[in-house]
Length: 312
Ligand code: HSE
Image 1 (cartoon, protein in one colour):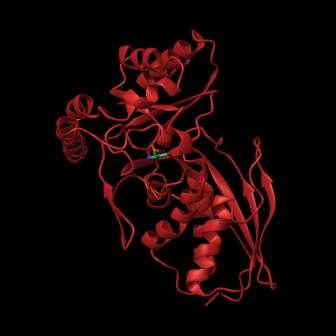
Image 2 (spheres, protein in one colour):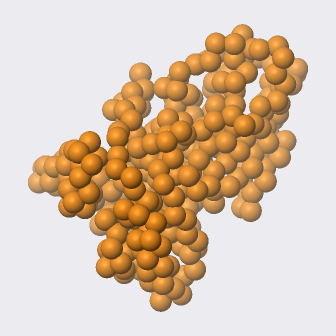
């Protein structure tokens, strides 16, 4: 049942960084830097219509191709909500940046919808609905952007369906440095180039890095984090999509970053530093390294956002 006194709700959903080097499709974190806003206005004709998208890049207006409207449609179907909604999307996250743009729009839509409900659904359910949007955007129901986007913090996704199970992980105080080079990498194609199989040797080595990374977060152990956040499987395959990738990563590490890796499927990189001063040095080094390849880059320094998406 919908609350009768609410006509319009706006929700904000933050940018996120998926994978974190060791947790392909199962780990991600929420950022404080930028995000998307979605405004839902109730209609009476049963239609779900995208009224307006404020975005520097073109996005689909067809409701079954847009992540926000598709996730909202699935949520309404599942809850038997038939009134219809008009949608306005204000994109703060560049599409194809590796900062969870498609997930943020879907998450903001379902979080806004939840505010209309007399009995709101759980965050796990919201992840389930938002994942429909992620599926049309990237071809896979990976929750490593939508889960941190909705839960906040660093999340581990034990299961992304039937039922969704998300575990919020503790973490040391970290500054995230996000560098977005002006290159476009489509998640769908970045997934398409990955080999479908992993050798037993790599499986063992990568499991050890993932387990040690999680232990480092629980133990607040920066040195263990430094040693263990190593991507042995995905980075070697995707680095070719980002011109200068290894130079930029090396520049980050030389400037004192704890670690640096692809943010989601790229082209952005995420690096971690223990404080703001170090983060500034890391950021400058990474931006300079891209510029030696004649690539401009935007950058953000952000703590991990503990709250995730919320209604304004
Ligand atoms: N885990 C996904 C991938 C995240 O790397 O393809 C995409 O943002």
